[in-house]
Image 1 (cartoon, rainbow, N blue to C red):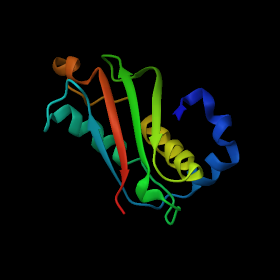
Image 2: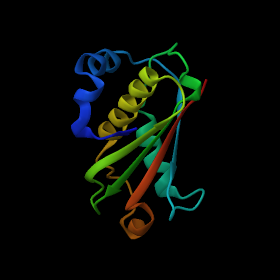
Image 3: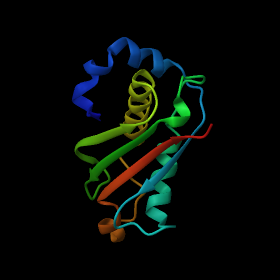
Image 4: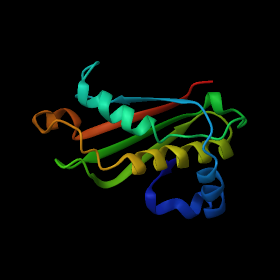
Amino acid sequence: MQLSTNHCPRIGLSLLVAFGMMLAGSASVRAASATQQPGNSAGGRLREDVAKNWNIPPGMEGAKDVRVRVHLRLSRSGKIVGEPKVTVTGGPKGTQQAMAAAAMRAVLRAAPFNNLPIDQYDDWKEVTINFEPAI
């Protein structure tokens, strides 16, 4: 399933509002990129910024099986360029949609990423963030 910021009606506005109001849940967020090295400080900063904003409702059916991947391009100033691409696998469709919406909200709330080192721009200009529930 592909989801972009312009396709929110596909998820349903009432669903987004309901999940946006629920701020409980436990999750882990991993930033990964073809150019990033494990332990890359820029990747760690980005991951922390996004993780602070990812909240999923507790008790969602099949949540432990859902994996969300958000791929985005960033400008030198840390702003998102274009539309992030969201890919979701595993779990029930309703849970996938809810977790994809939560992941997109987390990325958009964390942006722009102002604390990334400009001298390492080639390492973080394209980033893939993996969202996995810590259940």
